[in-house]
Image (tube, rainbow, N blue to C red; front, side):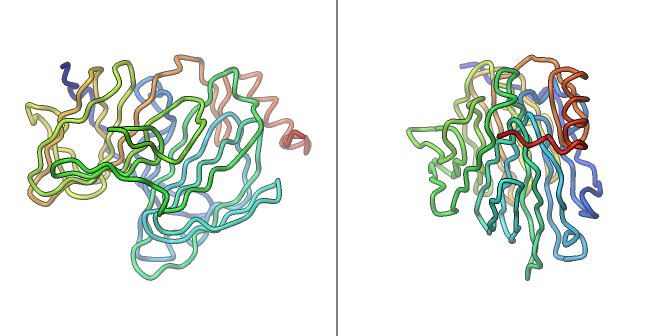
Length: 281
């Protein structure tokens, strides 16, 4: 058993994105080698509709996958391919932008605290121009693995014989919602070679056996390599998003919502967007 140790703790920053949505950017537009194959993680949450109703009007994506996990609230979406729908509480939308899609995501007024996450996962070079597609995942279709003092909701990946509903994902990541009871201590078996990230959004806890640094809401623990993650919940409990994936180790050319491998590919993508030839048949 090789226990993972904390490599770095990242503090999320409040930003305003879209047409005026206030959210906490946990990571993104920074040290991509630390989080590879993941590019960006936004944690949105507010009881004030003015913080989110402006939403994210029409914008393009290419070369990535965007994963929206609504913990509470409702988001309406539509795209250039004619798709439309609603992501409600507990639901997930896994969008593979691939060769290109133009879409909008518009949060709706919600009684209570609207909250959730959006994760951007990179696509490998050979899959950058794959055909766009969606996987809409209902809350009731997300299975749980129950351990002693903790529960894992598996959105993508498998653990303990339980497999998440997001299927045929190229980079084969883990995307789990882990909830631990107050004071619980447990080990999670992890895949050696994966970059592993833990973003706390309720309570606080530790992610190493030494309990060297407590991690609280809005913070991300980046773990060193190993095959075991040691978790300890504080007296108020702990809830965190666990993301794991094998790094692509490919060049990243990134501007706004488009991520390619070279500057030439990036320029071409924006030229096509402005010419109206962005969407491929």
